[in-house]
Image 1 (cartoon, rainbow, N blue to C red):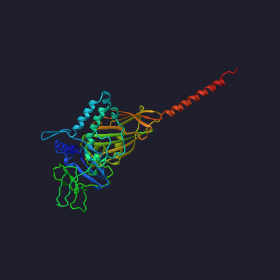
Image 2 (cartoon, one colour):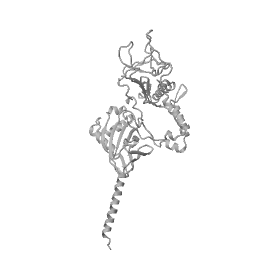
Image 3 (cartoon, rainbow, N blue to C red):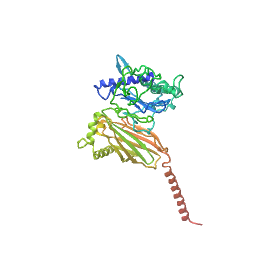
Image 4 (tube, one colour):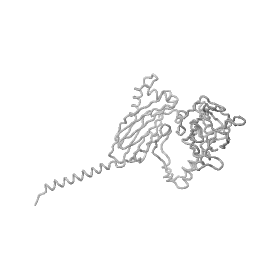
Amino acid sequence: MLSRRGYEKVQQIVEGDEVLKHNERDNPMFGKDIFYMSILGTPSEKEPWMLQFGGHHLALNITVAGEQGILTPTLTGAQPALYTIDGKTIRPLGQESDKALALLNALDEGQRKQAILSYRVADLVLGPGQDGKTIQPEGLKASAMNSQQRTMLMDLVGEWANIVHESAASAADGPTQGRAGRHVVRLEREYYRRTRAQHHGLLPDSGTERGHRVCAATVGRRSFAACPYHVPRPDQRLRQEGHRKVKRILAAALLLSTGQFAFAHRLDEYLQATLISVEKTRALLKVRLTPGVAIVPIVLAEIDRNGDGVMSEVEQREYAERVVRDLVVTAGGERLTPRPVSAKFPTIEEMRDGSGEIQLQLETSLRNDIRNRSLTFENGHMRQISAYLANALVPSDPSVRIAGQYRNSSQSLYRLDYVVAGAGSDWAVWGCVRALGLLLLGRVVLSKRAPRF
């Protein structure tokens, strides 16, 4: 499943989370005990199925379909970025950081200005539940680099791509000699047919034998009952975790469980992320507000004004209206009034465990007689405890093109410049026609008044 370096990196990420747990006074939200393994679908040599493994700052999603396999979506993060075990300094993402800085130093001043973003990014811009969306790209294109810089870039990308086992990469070009390309994932050797002995541990390598198989965590007609496993280290016994349910779904669908990975943002901030989609005559704004668990009481008090412990429909509507009043949207120097289209609130329990997200969908009309346009968005809601994100989606209408994006350092202030093909040109044509008509009319009038000889 993973290359040797990839497996080491995963181990270091998990160990780092255990260090984080102890540094946070045994905070139950962190640590190796909250990393999970799931099998989606039925493992098969022909039919698609999927394996997931992950936890805080780690998400591996491996889909296998016959001889083909794909490791996406994938996240490898680390917190802390550096820690010490037995006197040895560990940097799970050290190579990524070092190679990225080396590439940055290899850029000239103009390239570096494009590559470095001047604003803070507090959280994921797009994630689970937002499939099919693409944000407007920013930064330095690889095509603008020289050959040496592109080589360094591909080497950097390899730090993420090369965590997959070498056999998976070669499977794309066909089976390797002496080994079928489908033998990519090997989790455990459940039993030996002859001796009936069991081996509960990860296999030492990716090789396969006839007695090896991957078993789904279901109760069925098998020699020994299968169950989901938690694997802290490769040399430890697999421990049964009967309370963890494995849900069977079509393995071809890429699924990333949001509940297990809900703590990506800081716990003491109110994350407010806005996605803006511009069209010819309107702009759509989707605002996601996610309070960290430490400031949930403050946000709840702002919503539940009567303090009865319930977010009523009236309180939800009034809170959404207050959020909208704290937003300033202008276009061409004219202030616009966004209209609420929909509002979705989580339960209080979801907010208290850090997975609750308020979603507001807003809409505002835009003029259609200007070719070069600018839309400014400013979020002033609960500034003292908030962190902001603001991004534009790639327009679905090919006649609309993003020209530029500008933010302040906190992303509370955002300006979007864009161009609408054909806009204003019709008005210009009609203006020319009107001017020509007036000119002709004037000549007719003058010709009638002119004296005749």
